[in-house]
Amino acid sequence: MRRTSLLLSLALLLPLALGQTIQTQTVPPIPATPQTTNTSPRTSFPATSSPATGPLTPPTALPEIAPVSAPTPRPAPPRLQPIQPVPVAPSASPNPPAQGVAGRVPTDPLYPQQWDMAAIRAPQAWALLGGQAQTPVTVAVLDTGFIPTPELGTRLVNGFDFVSSAARAGDGDGRDADARGSGPNAYHAEVVSNIIAAAHDAQGMAGINPQARVVAVRVAGVDGLIDPVDLIDGMRWAAGLSVPGTPVNRFPARVLNLSLYADFIPLTGCDPRIQKAVDEVTARGVLVVVGAGNDDADARGYSPAGCRNVLTVTSVDAVARRPAYANWGLNVNLAAHGGDSGQRLTLSSTLVPSGVMTPEGGTSLAAPHVTGVASLILSLRPKLSPAQVKNLLLLSASPFAGGRCDPDTRKTCGRGVLNAEAALKRALASNLGK
Image (tube, rainbow, N blue to C red; front, side):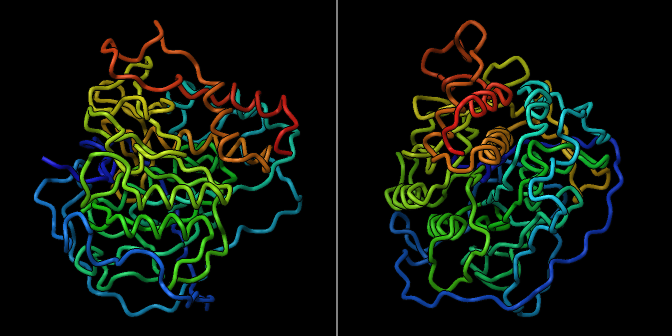
């Protein structure tokens, strides 16, 4: 039976267990201000149906992740004016050190439980940043939309809501300028974003790049499903390309995190429309990082995990073995820690009473580890191409114990396991991309 696509399922995560409580602060709403709208003729595919299946219909399969709580009916919001993305607060220094990373161990209360950071050698990578000039990097998270969180503060940008189906959007309309998450899967984008960029501020958890700006682009409905057309337009917009009928993206991203796959199409290979969008954003200098999927299947059948020019990431556990859920195959480029029921990741979330989430695991969680390290590389070498960043990550990967992630020779996991320290050392050893 086909499962939804968040990788919890965007094809995403699995059942959740709640841990200790952390304190969170109230985050002011993102203000609305006028924004320029692109009115050029529409060139992408219609957003109301899929050529493969006709009109979109609700899924019959249950989501791959357990909701945080039962969905609460949400009244239709008033029509909003276009919302201006929130700029990063100015700093006294043009290249300030990332808070808490210049050789210092984060003091965030959940950090001692974040075994995945030690596993990818994040502390050693942060130590390399001391004294280095860094360029702020923008990352786009194409997912369930944003949840205001103190982990990101003003570095969180309200992008755009590309869910075209009003029935699936859950917010009273279709596409609009309010990219807030809605429904039981709304936490998905929050935890993905926190892995990438949570502040080192003695609160909650520590992210990989606490200086990164995160643009939230909503492409998943309340059901956790993704229309290929919504994904295509979301990718193009996030990269700064023109999408008719939408505001101009004032913060184009250098890295797109797609912890998802497209629904309403067969799992028989990369959809040519999605491949075209990948090629367009790559040509613009944007790296596309994709979760491989959680079906214990060959990733080549999934879009965009099976596409060319993406960096497809599968999941490994604490000892760098492939968990039973993780997709595999020749289209997988790299592995990162996504956890499993035996050793879960610890994540902060404002959407659970305790403030702490411990999902069983998923490639949705592996992909943002790679995205975060890619953003650190680009902060040091901002002129690197997507292919060059991908090459640095693959060449610096740690080998699997015994040379394999799985005893089954078909179930390969790419070049190796993400190694943040080795990747930054390679970047710093070269003048390429300065």
